[in-house]
Structure formats: structure tokens, C-alpha cells
Image (tube, rainbow, N blue to C red; front, top):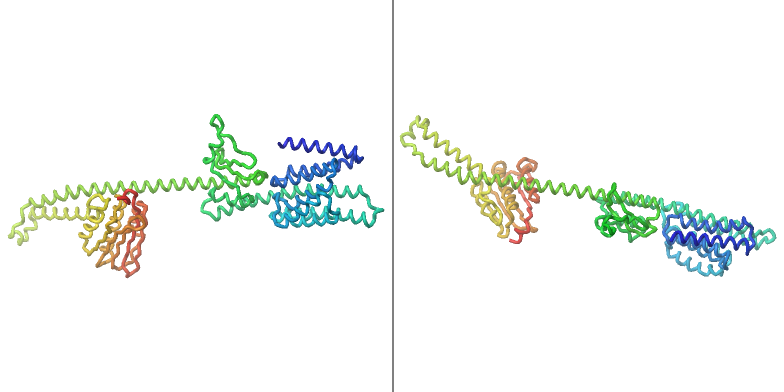
Length: 522
């Protein structure tokens, strides 16, 4: 299509040049100048990194200028020049006044206005256009270009009216052609400046994305790029989501790069595809800025996903380790309760009781049987102390209530236990809840000088809410080894632990523990 457009324009330039030489009788130099103006606008249209509508308007000025050598359409290029100025750089008016100016330019195409009105309309068009760009050169292009062309037209009109004897039509035409050629060159330079400013806006959008969001995800970057490029339809797709649409017949990937599409690579691997208007990504500087922005956002998204995966693996490993430790502890506890303690009690029962006489005899302390009895009783008490804080049986499916009441019965300080009927959970959750209560009760008895302890377990927010409070001296250190280990256990069960212990105000230990779906349905 581009080759056909170039060929058509070249043919039009040749025909216009021939008409200037043969039919209009212009000199070769005047013919070259005339054709150069049309080619200048063609070059501006081809090389300016602006949206396609604006490039078509610029090209149409060149076409109308050359066609005027063949057809009676001389004023048409002026009407199109007004459109170029009003619509720069996006190819459409940026204000409502621009649409009014375009409507007023329609009669101009038919030669209904005199040169003063044409000059005035050009000035208004220049002041109306290029208001929406952040480029200084882009903002000054339209008023400067319209001012130069309007000045040439007004000067030619004034001289032709006031001093017709000194008026030189050829010199006036040459000045007008020079002004038009300057507009074409200015269009190209201003468009380049606008493109660079757009690239900086894209870079700024990336900086804002990284600064204002926790991660520069592609989803967060897309609207900022759309705003910077003034393309509300711009989309950024992860490559995995669109890969299948770009597979060749043999199953190999086909590059989607092209007008309106930009494939972003991280190294040699595709990571994202940007889809926008054809003209939004036409400028190489803008494409590079967009590519860098999307690549960085995709890399950041990938790194965050990797970190989240590693964190999940660490949490799962901690939970598995905690569960394995609990199983090992429960196994040892079961053996101590069901094998060692009964054996000690049986051995103690088989020993004959010390005689009454021996009991009052000081030498009875050296009685071997008395020593054995004392040693067996001490061993039994030590085993009981070891298993005291361990659940009496594997928990889960509502067995937590009985385990807590057993724990309360063994406490030297009165403990009240309230467990809601629906406070049922899986083994991991109920075990974590048990150890929260056991550790809190132990701390209250040993360190807080509490006289009363309350334990409450309820269902809340789909999980278990465990609260242990006492009336002790308070001031518990949440960073101590016991509470810190308890916090780790709760975290391994995906829960949260809170400790409130003002000095002299007692201590409250609270835990929120999630309940698995299977337990929640039970």
C-alpha cells in the first residue's frame, strides 16, 4: 500500500510539472519550486511520527497543491491547510472551537473567501490547534506557521491593492511557496518534538506506576500508557494469554510485531504484547519507551510471583515441620502415658509398705525399699510433668473441648473453660488452639500470680477465636521465647496471635485460626 501511494504521488508530481511547463508556461525553476511544495508535504506526511489522520491531512495538502496545476482547485489546499493546523498533532480538533473552524473552512475550498478572510481563518486555526501537546515546539508550530502564511497572504493582498505598479506576482507566489514549504518542514520538526515528549510521558507513566503501586503489574501499567499515548483502547496482554493466536501451521510462534502491535521481550523470551492504534506506536522513540516500561513491569510481576511462591513454600514447609513435631511429641506422650506411667505405678504397687516401726526409726531412711519407693514416685511425677501440656489424644473434629477441660482440671489455679458447640476444626487448627491455651495458662500460673483464668473458644469469621485471660500482674513480654514460639505455631496454621498485657491489668492472649473447608462443613 505504501509503495502504491508513493507511485501515485510521484505520477501526480510528474503530471503537475508537465502542466506547469507546457500548459502554464512556467520556467523550469518555477516548476521545480511548485512541485517541491507538494513533495514537501508528502515527505512531512511520510516522516512525521503523528497519528494517521494527521498524516493523511498533511499528504492531502500536497495532493491538492499539485492537483491545482491540472484542475481548477487552487483554494482547496488552503482549506486542507486549515485542517492540518486545527487538528495537529492528533489528527482531530482538541477543542470545540476547532470543529467550528473546520466548518468555516468548507467554503474556503470553493474559493468563496478573499485573501484577508483566508488569512484571518488561518490565524484562528493556528491559535486553535496544538493545545493538547506538552511539547513546546508542538505548541508553537501552529500559531507560527499560520502567522507566516497569513502574513504573506496579507502582504501580497495589500501590495496588489495599494501599489499595483510595484506588485510582482512571481515574487509573491515564490514567497507563498516558501511559506508553505516552511510549514511542511515545521510540521515534521514539531511532530518529532511531540513524539519525544510523548516518549517522556510514557517514561513518566512508568515511574508513577512503580512509585504509586506495590508492583508494576501489567494491569496497572496499561491505563497509564493509554493515558500517555492518548489511546483509550490500548491493551497490554501477557504473552501466555495470546500465544495461541500467533502460532503458525507447523506450531511455531509467528511474531506479532507490526503496526499497532508491539511484542515485548525479556532477553529472548516474549513476555507481553501491546496492542494500540497504528499511529500510537508509530514513533520509534515511543515504541522503545513503551517496550522498556512493559518489560520492567513484567519483570517486576514475575519476581513478585516468584517471591510469593517461595514464601508459600516456606510457610508450607514450616507447617509440615510443626505437624511432624506434633505427631512425634504425641507419639512419645502416648507411650509415656500408656506404657511408662502404668509400669511405674505397677512397680510401686508391688513394693511392700514400710512398717510402722520402721517409719519412726531414723535408720529407716536407709531402708532400700523406702529409697526405691521414693525414686519410683519421683519418676512418676516427672513423667506426669512432661506429658501435662500435651493433648491427651489427637485433636480435631471437636475433641478440643474435652482436652481443654482436662488441662483445666490439672491446673493449680482455677480455670473456667467455655467452648462453643460449633467450635470444631481440623487437627492442625485444634492442636494450635490447644497449645495457645496451654502456654497462656502456664504463663499465668508461673509468672502472673493469677487467681483466676478464663478460656473461651468460639466460631468467628469462619474460623476459631481463642481467648485466654487472667487477673494477674500483666506486663507479659510478647517477644519472649514462649510467646514468640506460640506466635510461630499460630502463623504456621495461617492464624494470627495478639497479646494485651498492661502492667497491673492482667493478660489477654487472643488467637484467630482458620478452619479448613472439610471441618467447616462438619
